[in-house]
Image (cartoon, helix red, strand yellow):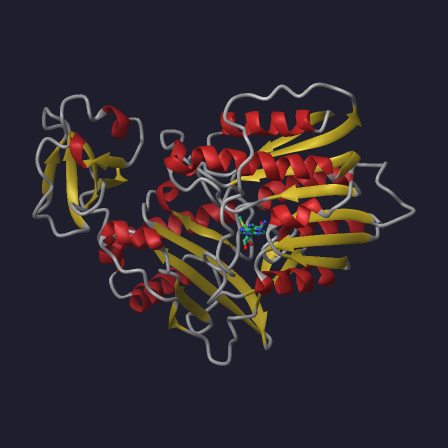
Length: 458
Ligand SMILES: C[S@@+](CC[C@H](N)C(=O)[O-])C[C@H]1O[C@@H](n2cnc3c(N)ncnc32)[C@H](O)[C@@H]1O
């Protein structure tokens, strides 16, 4: 029998506008006693249907909606879960994703707490798909059950529906539940684990294939799908990379008498620099890429990935702020895509300062006529705040810079307008103009401070 939780008067406004989270203080009764992850029907104070999803009395987010359809009686049952994942998969194909893509993006696909990045690559003449999966909530853990059996059924259904021709035999599933936030749900933070492998395949140096930016081909990028950061690769920048490639593609003023210089800050395995190199080389340019990251292992992959596209690569391992201090004004494209500096509300002041520092340096080293790509993947650091920081970084360099692109997460990371929390990634690209003499007006709270601690190794 489905458990019913009633909301306090007026507390239905947010879930009715599409926001899938409910906090315990918004409930009319205590959630205690519910087995974490069990099916719950949410009703308003008048007993009218609001949503169905799962509850967890141990979590601050006590209820997460999986369905707003009153006729969907059990959105957590296996058939329903498989149907939702296949719908998400199909939507990526509709959007033009071919090889590797984020197949399930949590709340964006009405599967809160589930991330599946599907990576396709070729080894020993075999096309292999790896489902790199993060299970972030008790509800998803309970609904998926035994992961290997679940994915086998999913792949067989996908083949029947014509979504893929990669067999179960050539599919692998790695659980990347090495995520601290699982503890907030009463779950353990586990080590990465393959629940299904492919005979003879090597996943710690796996060549994933991605849609190439702005051409029909695909780009191969090596990365570690077992021990790499997050699910092994960052897929969220695909559309932003494509947009920057489009701007570069039409630029008749890029240097022809020397290599185009690209600076890829916090490059991880070099997604930006590899794609940009491919596009620039296609237009006949020599390319020199400087890749900076704190992770030695990530840099080894980055170098290999950009060299494969024809770049001459310089790597600089270390803290990005320290490395940047030693760089000159000589770059035609600067990409600043640091880790999330703001992970909790209390981090906002220090995070704001870190974004200001990295972007001040990014604009300092960009040539006139160059591009500066500034990114923030801190969901809690909202777009207005980021824009203010960038405006200041530009002013501090006495620059005139045109904002020419504004982007967010790629379409395989769908959002919901009622759930702004999911639209975490922000990207602004500026075309750098001439330097002028000016006066920098400092506002309160921007004093000097240390950059936040570097993230762990890849
Ligand atoms: C958001 S990821 C970058 C993703 C990458 N740009 C891409 O699109 O694939 C952040 C990267 O910053 C690196 N990093 C974290 N702290 C750093 C620091 N203080 N200095 C340099 N790199 C750092 C991490 O190792 C990671 O590779």
